[in-house]
Image 1 (tube, rainbow, N blue to C red):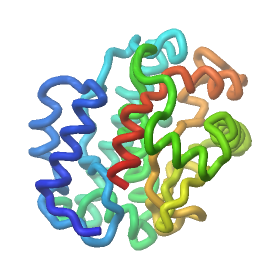
Image 2: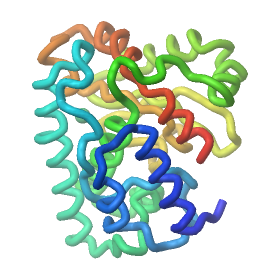
Image 3: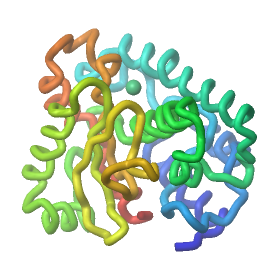
Image 4: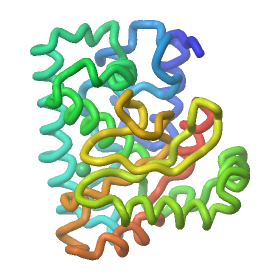
Length: 251
Ligand code: MN
């Protein structure tokens, strides 16, 4: 379970390269918060820094599935605000971000304010979400060990997608659908309200989030209006399974 920061950094850099992230992100990540401690309580996944990272592609890269204006508002307004409010909460609640990886904070989030819960979750979830997507030519289907695990735990990739899509469609109001690696190693689908996620001690289903889908209206309303199921159906075309595979292998 324990992992040194060196290992974590290497994984993060590999993930960054896989995601085709912009040059310069590596140095940003290494200068960021939370990469100095041995990660001894929270799950061993690629770490997400406390600060918003550059979007790994252009605002229009996911068209026609997600339009450029939605991406721009989502990234530069909504997600930026979560990151800013998280930074404020970290100061106000005296979190030592250098020695507390974000994942560890999330694992203890019930000890903090609702502002921390909403914005730590909001920031983490969006960083994960951006990384999980890429242009139409990224890998379109799960492969290798991840595919085998999905087939073992859901029966087939299509059955998994159906269950995951239903979790997104059936989330009343705002929230997320998740593919989660549980502590026992089994893959499950879950859904959380608001900006909660499976890393949180308050989550109904706990584990490592491998893939998350934002079903807040701000994620799709400009193009899809009330048609959330259409957004979800189209979204599968921009999932970057290479990144999910990396996350699975690190979980
Ligand atoms: Mn969002």
